Length: 366
Length: 198
Image (cartoon, rainbow over all chains, first blue to last red):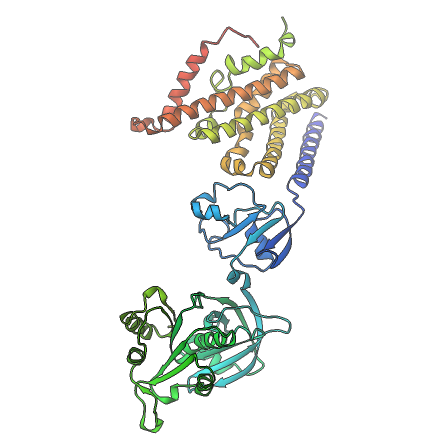
């Protein structure tokens, strides 16, 4: 009998206590529905309170960079929280200096959503998304370069700055068992926002480029994510020198089309280099742009033109051609896209002619 | 004079000065030693412990009077008291997380560790043994908490002042804390005899 009372009473007391804890949690940890206002109303999310800002945003498909998964050890998840965050936590202190704290930066993985929040997130982060595109057309530009036009699903648009890139995901094929992704610059203008164009060169033994060149046909679906990248105009209003080789044309073309569309008052000189004529492409469009726009100058150059090319344009290494045409590099910006070797050589020529290193931007696509 | 007739205020002051949980009874030492390096955190923990002590004495008194004694479960009292303390500390954690999040994160693991702080179970058992009334228990809880808080901030203040001094290598940390506590306890013996509560 005593055993029964013991068991019953201990169980009853534990039951009552458990009930009290459940009730307490329901009333204390229940933050209800909270509103997250991003970038002054650019986007308003309604989320269940109680989790961290990082996970609440990720659940709504807004991906704040994070390397440590919310453990407050990488410091990458900084966002500006204008209101609603509560006091600075000791776990955030090592990653925010005095200036950042004053600007309102907080660590998204440590701030708990307990009420309505107003945050500011850089547009680039805000725009990163995954898209299931369909191949609208494939153009064979040269023997080893293909152009792809990828159409976004109906109703979806991509917001990007000219010069940015996307991650392109291949599917398993032939002997390649897994999906890989590579970065390819967008070659279409940002205004063309329901599709993107890419220029992809067949890299010898390349996993992704071989997939593109051998497996894809019009109508196939391709997953991409983006936009990413810091290779874009920085709003400094300086005249531009652009240098590219081969598929490096992609971001430059995007920049040129964007600048001409927006009618920015910038003078652009684009040096497009190759070895022989068969490696140059898209010349008609670029020559046409030069003819119609006085502020765009197109200088294609071949380093070793073949006799049958009948080449009447510039001859020589791209670095020499640039050196000849650049004039003074003062107060100019340079945008380079091509192999690391070409870029390093061009940086030397540019700095020698007066372009300061902090005004040279490049995308080294190996 | 029977114990029930002692003025609750006497109990309050006695539990701070003559019957201090740490300095006279040496209960609750582990979190006392670990959290006493920074004054602000020590003060925060002391207040949290006081809060837990008040609520646990009150609720455990009621549980003892109305559940344990009538049902003849005195042999289970330790288990039941610990369960109540654990539940209470959980709830206090939730309250702190909601209303005082930075203190909650600063205390970290030491907040749930209050559950196994022997001082908490200690004052409950003292209350049972000395057969305090409800009001006396409340004052006893508050006083013990204040006494614990006083002891930990005194140690934290001394340690902060001593932070830059050079100590013999073996004594750094717990070693010197024990010595300081011992000296403080010696000093508090001077208060004995002023009040009697047991």
